[in-house]
Length: 258
Image (tube, rainbow, N blue to C red; front, side, top):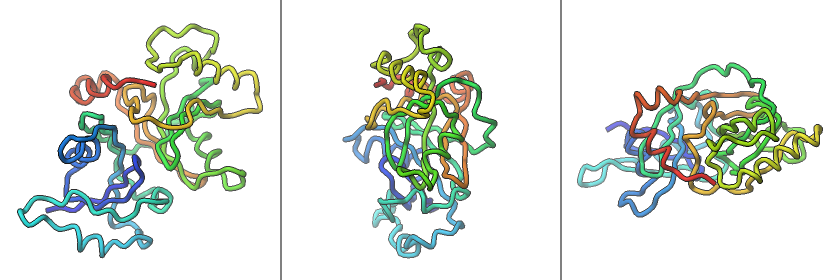
């Protein structure tokens, strides 16, 4: 029975498991008896990477099948300051699991550039969880948030970018109704604050994350990085999701925004 290593972001934890990604995602999102429900985002980690900061051998010794032969669902190895201690290059693939327990895997790819939009919207996935409006594209945003010379900085950040529609270019344009966020006017005011204060690069839209991440509104994909490295896991197009991942896509669209 194969043992896999996962880095969960919600909540942050490093976990050994004998479940494949699809079943592990359902386990995180719905629990073993479907008594909980919430989204999950996790990476599969290359176990041949330098993980000397964790007690790998002890965890492997514990990650054995149950007496009835069923797989061991989880052996937690760390629950604090995990993301910056796992090498970026060890992150093989990222998985997005909807609250109903359906999982989509995303492979890494080169990042093609930050684009030319005036404004961006980011949902941070760890180690902190605000939703942030910014003038900065994904790479520049990641570098600023993790810059070691800043008074407030993070050692590493995982996040997704969210669609802004017409607000990405002009905060005075009336949105076409395709934005499912509950308080679009508040979002617009945050973007206007950036517009009217050129020296300001970011503004928090929501300080905390509720358990209803809008996977259906992901603009580009999942990002993770720091001031030295940057990884990108692109989201397929809506057409590709509808054609090849229909159940996951419909499940993601059913999630309510905030």
